[in-house]
Amino acid sequence: MTTKTTVESHNSMFDAVLARLDVAAKIYGLSEEVTQVLRNPQKQVKVSLPIIMDDGKLQVFEGYRTIHSTVLGPSKGGIRYAMDVCDDEVKALSAWMTFKCAVANLPYGGGKGGIKCDPRKMSVGELERLTKAYTIAMADVFGPTKDIPAPDMGTSGREMAWLVEAYNKVHRGNFPGVTTGKPVGIGGSLGRDAATGRGVMVATLAALKKMNLDPKKSTCAVQGFGNVGSHAARLLNEKGIRICAIGDHTITLWNEKGIDIRAALEYAKANGNVLKGFTGGTEINASELLTADVDVLVPAALQNVITEEIAHNIKAKLIIEGANGPTTPEADAILQDKHIIVVPDILANGGGVTVSYFEWVQNNQGYYWTEDEVNSKHDASMESAFEEVWLNRNHYKTTMRIGAYISALKKVELGIKARGHY
Ligand code: NAD
Image (spheres, rainbow, N blue to C red):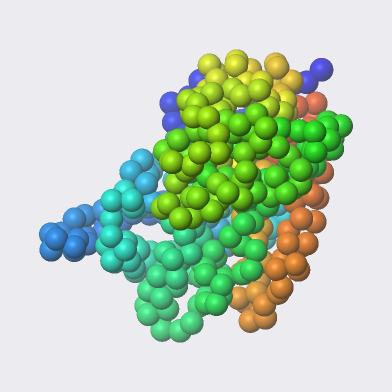
């Protein structure tokens, strides 16, 4: 019998994090003091960024950075460019980073940042000015030993290169370790681009093994065809898993015989990184992908897509959370009742931050590794994190999500107690 993980309904993303934290803290027996520390982010910074747009007019953007914890090391976490970036979202994502880094056994705390903007409607010049203005505003927050950003939704290696350039100008030196996810050639690591998708693949294979399912006889649906989704679909396919559904914000496609993922990747690359117009499957509704008749479901796009209603209709036996926060806490309880295994975001998408850590190590030592070295270190790290969470799941008779939180809480608790108070 598993311990129920039902939580109170919540109004915000940060509340959803706290809901899971509270459940895990209770099952694990975390002290009230340590729980209190983790319920409150360490630092929150909000800046206003006036930018001259291409039409010569000035527009003011809001920029955020939240440092949830530096108990286990400098804070680590991406920068998101999207219209729904807000205080609550950045807080939630920063807390997840604390737990994700701890689950992956990295010497990092958690942070997250973002700018409220629509990058698809901005020119390259506008995005460069905005990124550099944001970096200058955060020049005392960021730092290779303090707070280390990375790309997230709406940002990529291009923005990280601008960030390093602006940071170097302010601090008058060369600090490649101030951010990760940089292009290879200016301090980026081989293997970083595909790392989150690779971690999703490793977690999927590990879970299928525990479930005694053969990958070569398994089918899968992947929501999102950006950095995480496209690499995950490709790598899962290379391991023999049949990808029957893929989708992005422009179209969702189904093909029972399996979608030709290489052709889809080539099509997206040649067509502005979107799938619209790709003819390798029949068009279906976005929600049909989530409830498709497949063995494995990989949500790798947005948060809160697996709601109570969707959860009731999910047919997959295994969910691998490539995206951050794709499942609502209310849906968790339904999935648990249906005995669907959910490999949670803080474990399943930890491959990205793991290789970010390897990038930072390479920057700090000034010596770079081959892609095979990066990939084999990554796979070993993901496999051991998975095993640790699986053991917690069994030991505490709970879900993998709560097992992952417990894995993180044990390490963060140790750090908080060892450092003492003042
Ligand atoms: P991305 O911007 O590269 O891609 C996002 C994808 O989602 C795109 O294909 C987009 O079309 C699709 N999408 C957007 N709206 C959609 C909708 N309504 N329906 C279906 N698809 C939709 O972003 P990414 O880096 O792949 O990030 C995806 C998720 O993974 C986010 O939750 C992010 O926080 C998380 N994540 C990313 C990384 C990383 O290394 N990139 C690491 C950990 C977690």
